[in-house]
Image (cartoon, rainbow, N blue to C red; front, side, top):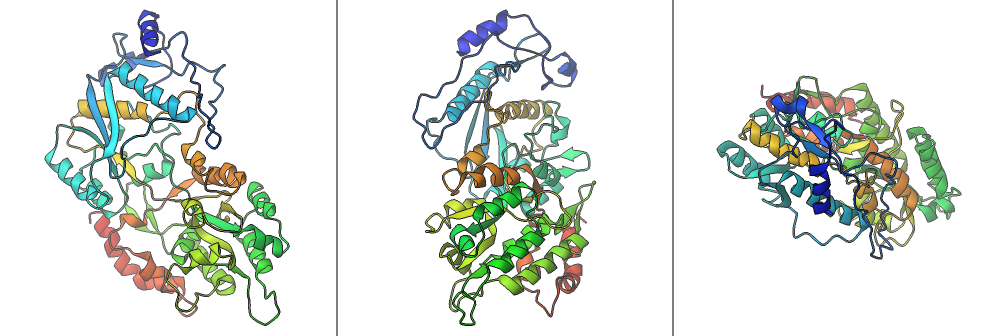
Amino acid sequence: MKKKFLAVVLGAAMVTSLVACGKKEDKKDDTTTTTPDDTTDVTDNTDNTDNTDTPDDTTDEADPWTVIVDADGNPVDLGGMEILIADWWTGEQEEPKTAYEIARKEYYDWIQETYNFTITRAAWSSWGDMPADYVNYATTGGDENIIFCLRQGGELTSAMAQGLMYDLNTLDCLDFSESKWDAAVQSLGASGDKQFVVRAEEHEPTACVYFNKRLLKDAGIEPDYIYELQRNHEWTWDKFEEILAAVQADTDNDGVIDRYAMTNFTSNLYPAAVFSNGGSFIGKDADGKFFNNIESDATMEAMNWCMDILSKYEMPQPEGSEWNYMYASFANAEAVFFPSGRAYMAGQDFKNMEDDFGCVCFPMGPRMTEYTNMATDNVYCIPSCYDADKAWKIMFAYNLYTDPVPGFEDYSPMQKGYENSMRDSVAVEETIAYLLANPQADLTGCIVGLDLGPQLFWAVNKDNTPAQQAEAQRNAWAELINQANGQ
């Protein structure tokens, strides 16, 4: 396929096509693209009973195998550059099995041969050592061509503040208006007109509400009703509380509640509620400076709402139980709802649950008209020690590497991955889709020393309101935020 393709490319007349990366600044306006006369169809001949991937229909679309050429009409040549995407978990790559995996490998092979480079992904450091190893590399320099994967946190903020990350906005091969770039990560990595980190992978969905279908039916509520509310954008705080009140009951009339409405992990519940109401704990202004947003109206409203529903509907912690009792409590059908979940819990904490469960987004607060969830995913960057030519070539390749696979432009690997852990198709096709579509950056981890558990969530009660606790912490938080801002 590749030999046939290159022969067609080199023999074809050059035509101007879609706007793409130009060959450095003086050649940007001269960059053109060319497409072959045909492409080879990708067909999956394997039995993918549980993992069937169907390519998008591109019959009437422009040919996806488009070559970016330089001012002389030749494919951009990266000179055999060897590029590494460095993380702390990638091991030996398995052979592709599904139609998507096969098409992705063929696409990767094609871009590497067409533009004369190689790109691989591998564990370069450990989770704990990566921040320090990155700083050391960015400070001392290196001959390698590395794109670094970094976890969010104070170390990341510090590296940006120290000028150890390359300003990606200076590279004309990147267009951050493209939908593939995670907007939440862009807000995290922005400082004025500079952009230091990016992510072209879907984020891990958070702020899920799991529900026990059998217990719902026992309470007279059809599980599909919850999905219908979500689908009609009627899944709100008020509607959620209405259902909580309806399902909690003393079923044997002995004066003791035996069907609790909810069990939860409070440190996840508060953030889910805050973001569902358009609030946040830490904000970031247009100049890239962090600020305290804990005392905002949206955040305080969400905190107070959480305290109210916890006081009415939360299952008490069993005597002698561990801190994580709530996971087993929901899995053992001791409560109807688990409103502080993460999507991965379906295949981890609840995979052996006997009762069937469903999963929806966290309900919308009164200040929101769309479902949302927090994003705290890993990000990608290159060190500022790279020269302009090297940085451009590396990110040119990374831009190609992260483009949608031809024929699978609307395919979601993250969404597909939940098919084997969620218990019904609605949770995958609707809930996960909602959560992937609207992530909001949670910047709390960027402030070294800010620990919302002991400093806020665990300290509030009926005698110490969220507003009182936030006020008590105000000066201490201000000092931490000033340090993060380099002040």
